[in-house]
Length: 374
Image (cartoon, rainbow, N blue to C red; front, side, top):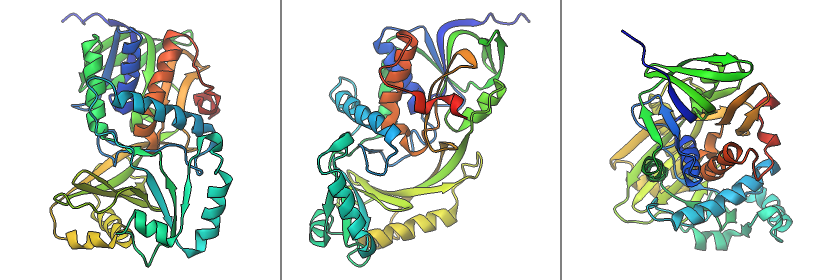
């Protein structure tokens, strides 16, 4: 049997999570459309891209300085997407809240004072006990006496956003192929000349590696050590039949509680368990106990039906996303390692990668995110 000829594409995006789809979307907006997105799973957004709490963080005092410009711009892009035709992803600016005990009150007050002039785009308020209870009456009065409140933070549905991105890509002629696993590369003169998959071979102008937790594995086939590994998190979703338990995204030290319409999600955790996506009942119990500790009224939903999910998130070993080009391969770009920030930083990542491809340069300094830093 004759082997099928290689498919020529101007850009091949490896990975159909929220990052890969965002890159496709922003390329389509620039009319750069001879592009294909390939995804190893049977559908796009199968992992953390479609299974997360949907928090869209603005700039927090705890964020590394290098990330703050990305959060600021991504927040602006999300506001624009929410107004775009065909983009219904439950976007709402609800704010997020980091609760604390008596022991951290002075630290929290100091943080709020440090950023009271809005420097670096950080907008944060200190809430004392009374203000905290007015803001979130169901929060534990015994455990928490204060909080840092970020009023500009939002939430959305990443699964719906992924579908919107995918729909826009398809409308513009960008192809999306699922069930397509990369098996190898051919490299000549520091350039990828061929990408081999179990569905055929590609002759790409540019390769964008956005393979999420599998980015390290795929990079190894290129002869590169890009230290991205899967970290598993868990989510518990319950339906409260319209009862509002929390108004903000409650960000605890290890787990969070948030509510989107009638669904409350308790989740988080960090397990370096390889590519194992099985739900760990011990982690579920831990998350639920922590959720009740933060929001005691959750205990009344102990017997309620719930959906329990495990998802893999791509963690770069220094905790900073990998975005941009490598000196080692002239036609390969990286967009991976976002860990907990994939949904929050998807638009800005997509826009920056599209700029590198179409304009040959990005509108923001990406040196802190270079794959060559390793």
